[in-house]
Amino acid sequence: MATESHLPLVGGKYGHGEVDSSVETYRRSLLPSQFALVTHLIWTIVWWVTFEETDPSSCSGPLYNFGNTARWVLLGFFLWDLITVIAIRSSKARGMGSQIPLYYKTINLVYNVITIGFWAYSIWALVHREGCKHTPLSTATWVWVLIYAILPLMACCCLCFGVGIFGGCIAAIL
Image (cartoon, rainbow, N blue to C red; front, side, top):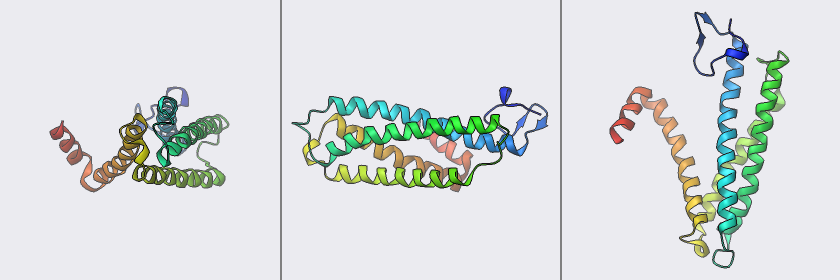
């Protein structure tokens, strides 16, 4: 049986044997958390740099306030993801890989609700961007809104049409 030290993060089998359910649960928990950790680190850097480059005299109002909030919220998301990855790894090290505590699921639900609310706030800020048109802050917010609108759409396409058909469409577009 595969051990954690040489465990592939993708796929259901390792070598010739099956991977047990605790390893599969560990993998399903860790991989998205690591992806979110890296993604939120990148967005945290983007928002800090973009906001620092924004001149408050030429850009004010809801979009400016959103930029200020975004850098702190994304720093919080990054720290939450870091704590989550450490907790998942330490629970696996203690032999609790298949036991995800109820409090983790509840806190993760709150985290997801905050994420969706933050995305909705970014849309509201874009609608009221009169004082910040054609600025890097406006551009970063548009990218944020569009990426997080397109990703769920892509996931739905994968589920509805299958990976093969969706992959063929992407290949045809590119």
